[in-house]
Every structure is written in structure tokens, then in C-alpha cells.
Length: 458
Image 1 (spheres, helix red, strand yellow):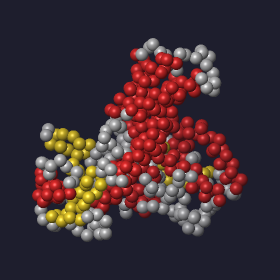
Image 2 (cartoon, helix red, strand yellow):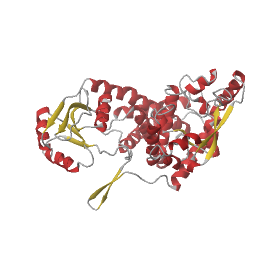
Image 3 (cartoon, helix red, strand yellow):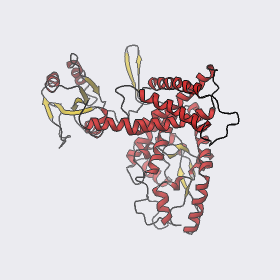
Image 4 (cartoon, one colour):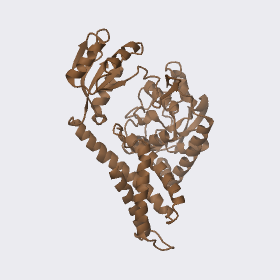
């Protein structure tokens, strides 16, 4: 929190210098006094940090992946600048330069992101790798979900959990753990788990049991009631549960919301306004690059610069999706519709470069402006593949409940190109059921990072 205050205050001071002292911008009204801006920057820093605190960025147990950290900083920065504008409306002693506010917002976001990702997360990871501050943790149960938890906790020590052992009870252990290099313990009944807590000095338990073993979960929780141990229950509902699963009360009965309705009409309006604004700005900013790539394609291979391909979009309706042509003309005349593969010999030399950095997808900004697509959503497939998958993949047709996207949750999680259509579908359903404008922004940020550092792009 102290570091954030310093960074935000320095951002406003730097913005003042750029605006009024750098001689980079004209100052027709003259240079204002610096002291009110200095005092104001400290007030703003404390106000901004208060917003971050309300958003949970300073909770001791909050540990985020780098992209989640950027997403939360972006969210906090947006809310923070709104709070500053509201504050300046009442604080009339100083009329702040709007350009200073804009520059300070951009600089703050950039520096806060670097500070948290490079400094804080790196420090936490280094410390955690040496076992400092890790909670001694046991996994109770077995199966694929337990293995995934072990994998996540071992791969992300910054979460703060060090796996001490696996505990199984007669009747629920199995061979699913195989050669997992973690100590395995077996007890005859659940009440014995409390003995292991004392014996190994456990700080946390992850209960990973099938949903039909509800009584066992209750027994385990009751057996740990008088011990200072953190207990977490991982439901065996991973295929249907979403990130923003809601917990509500019906009287004194807890209710878990597993699946909410898709976007409301108001959500669709907000998403469309965002898409239209961002895509239009994108075309304006990228127009020199679009013109350059168009010319290069025409000069380096015979055929048109653009390629329109029929895809299936919202509500199962077909549309023509635009791309820069990256393959030879008539590439599928002999093979018919097939997936693009790594080292695909149908590509042109320039097409290899375009696909590696996903530049062939840029013309889809025009699809977004037209209304055929959204910036973020399930990637559209060709009719041939839709017909092939709709009866084979569970809930595949649900992907068409939202406009197709230039990028999507599946793509930023590595499921692009010639990868599992089942996993892609799971990601698409997850996105539809957990949509928010901030999730779209998060996906766009991750997309830009993956364009710079490409993988699975061919």
C-alpha cells in the first residue's frame, strides 16, 4: 500500500512535469504553481489506494496470476480516476489540467503493473520457492481434480500452500495419484485426520471428495473444529461451475448458483458500445499497418489481399469473416476444409509471419464494426466443423449464444490452432456464463501479450 501511494504520487508529479516543464506541449495559459499539485497528488494517492483497498488488492490472502494482477490494477485505475474526477468536482481550489489527469492515469497504470508483477510477484515467488511462509497443506481425496490442485499449488508456490501429504481414507483411496512425489497417508476413519493435523502441524486442508460423499465432508470439518487449521472444500463440479459462482441465502439455507442466465439486453448494449468504440479506434490507429500489409500481400504472392471465409456466428447464423490472405489461392481445392497445422506448406512466406503474430486476423475489426462479430467471444468455426462437432461435443451449440469474437477466453488460455475442441468449448461456455466488461478487457490485455510473445499460432 505504501509503495502504491509513492508510485501514484510520483506519477502525478511526473505528469505535471511532462505537461508544464518538458517543453513538449504548449502552455498557452502559463505554468500553474506546483505546490497545489504536489499536495493534491498526495490526497489523490490516498484516495486511489482506498479504492484499491475496497477492490481487495491489499488482502493478505489475495494472490493473483500476472494477468489477473494487471486486470485488477486496470479495474482499480479506472474506478480511481472516476473517484478523482468526483473529488475534483468538490475541491475547487485547484482547477487541474485534464491532460495531467490523463497522463497520470496512464503512467500510474503502467508503473503499478510493473511494480506488482515484476517486483511484488517475483519477490513472493522467490520467497515461496524457498518454503518461507508456506502453509503446511494436506489434500484429502484422490482423482483428477486432486491432481490438478497438486499441480497448481506446486507450479504456483506464491499461492502460499506447501503440500505436506495426501490423505486417503479406506474406501476412497485409489491409484489415481500414481507416482506423484508427495507423501501418502491412509487412515481408517475420518476422525483420525485430526491426529494427522497435530502430527504434521498442518495449517490447511483441501477436501477433494465426490459430491456423493457429503457426509464425509461434514465429518472431516467437524473433526477439525477445535484445531487452528484452514479447511477448503473443492466441489466435484468443475465441468459446470463458473468463476463467479454466487453464494446466496434462502432464509438460513445457503444456495450455490452454478449457472446464471446469459447476457441481458443491457449487457448486450454495453458490449456493443464497447466493441464499436474500440474497433473503430483500432482501425484508425492501425490504418498505416493495414495499408502496409495489404500492399505486401499483393506484392509477394498472386491473388487478393483479403480472404472472406464463411463462419457460423451468433444464433447459428452464417457470415463472411475477413482475414488477410496467408495461404496460396485455392489451398483447399484438393483437401477440402482442414485445420491449419504447424509448418503448413499451404502458407505463403509472408503468411507464415502473419499467422505467427496473428496479424492475419486484423481485418476482423471491420466485422466487429459491421456487427457480425465482437472483439471478445467464442471463435467462429466453419459450417463443416460446426456440423461435425455439434453432436459430438457436449454443449457445443451453446457457443452460439454470444457473438463470435476476434479473440476469446479459450485462445488466451492456450487453446488455439490445432488443439482440443473439447477444452475450447469448455472455455467458451465459461466465458459466456461469466461475462463482464472487465473480463473482456482482461482478455484483450492477455491477447496483446500473446501477440507479442506468440504460441500455438500457425
